[in-house]
Image 1 (cartoon, rainbow, N blue to C red):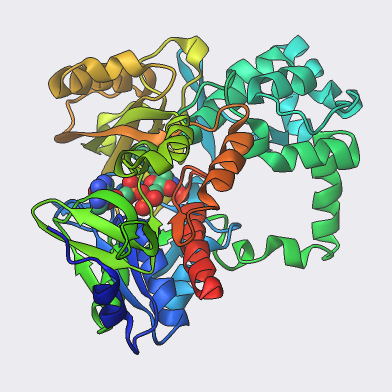
Image 2 (cartoon, rainbow, N blue to C red):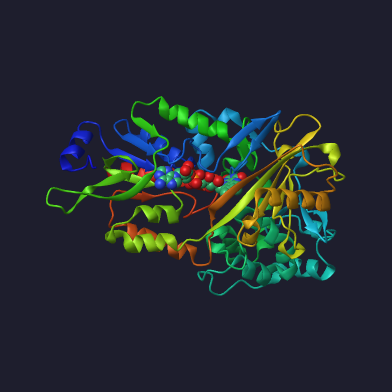
Length: 496
Ligand SMILES: Cc1cc2nc3c(=O)[nH]c(=O)nc-3n(C[C@H](O)[C@H](O)[C@H](O)COP(=O)(O)OP(=O)(O)OC[C@H]3O[C@@H](n4cnc5c(N)ncnc54)[C@H](O)[C@@H]3O)c2cc1C
């Protein structure tokens, strides 16, 4: 059942430039397709998406006046991918910043929400004097954290180190357990003992090496910013604030990209079409040719000049059946993934004893609760809940508590309600609760991650025309995923 072969290929390519397959219709695949057609007027693209909808992990729903993000809810703007995509499709006007009124975070300490010290960015205390008054750390913990300014840098900076080792070494155990683990864990849903600092937050290694200390680096950079010397560094972040999201939710960004692609007669979007395998298309004598054959369930195979594979690495590996790809597939499978669930709930604000006057609450593992974090979504961005109401998103599972996801939706809902009551004083059952599961959706950048990715890149080199993109390689967030899709597109155009 193949339409492949060299004749088919040359017919398909004649006069129409390169023909590219994009596999996966999440934000990475859509961004890659958009970049291809906007950069080269002769390229044609077919995008294959297994499900009936585009957007992958991104999903926005509206109900009873609530705008609910079931997956991601915003993106960071000091990485360029998200802003570049929005600029390219004329969508930038839709972006809104976070609401300044509630711009603070809470961390649970002995069962009670406390303010994260003002200016504390993941692990860098931008206002060290604010550490002095926080109830989150003991006196000894505060002294140890501030002593970071005098801790000598590591001798062998090139050696990868876990986030936990770095923070213990520089800031002490309390800072790790009570602040950094929950703040960083909330982003990566990872075990900090395994998380590679080099692959996730390399800036802190640079700070240590360049300035001798993270605190000293932070203070110096702040001073420079104030003196107006660091305009370039603030980049697009200055245009929008640190986080942005579309007014009508991330789903509206997906809708706009899909609409842009549909307007082009050089793009075919094929939903409900899963790719089942990928291999070099054989030439007449049976040897592998230079084009790629994409096999599809229940429909004829298709042949392309190049392929951008945007699936999670274990799914990408599943497509590479042929013996020629065994090593590459094995290397792809070496990247681990964590599962999590988001529990979306809607409430009246008056149903909480806590004022919920923050962007959210992070929960340290040492507190032994069943949730990782609660995002007060409607406090972060306007237009997410009707007046007098609040929309919460509670995160469950991750690498640290995978066993919780074995429970049923109603069990998860029940323990989330109990946790919201215990931690935030919820006094009435939410009007609406929905559990959204993300099975093996979050790549884990374990120590050695960059070496693993370098090995994948090395093994992919002989397979000209095959490009890998997505959140598994150089950054887990939306801007990195978008940037990786765009980079794959640029590479194909560069190679042609
Ligand atoms: C719960 C959660 C919350 C997050 N929150 C944020 C956030 O707030 N901000 C942020 O920046 N990042 C966030 N992220 C990360 C962000 O969601 C990812 O970086 C991004 O969505 C990855 O997009 P993708 O297109 O690479 O993958 P996906 O969205 O997973 O898309 C892959 C697509 O491939 C399709 N597919 C699978 N198999 C096949 C096949 N065989 N053939 C064809 N198609 C196939 C799938 O159906 C899917 O549509 C979050 C992630 C999770 C899990």
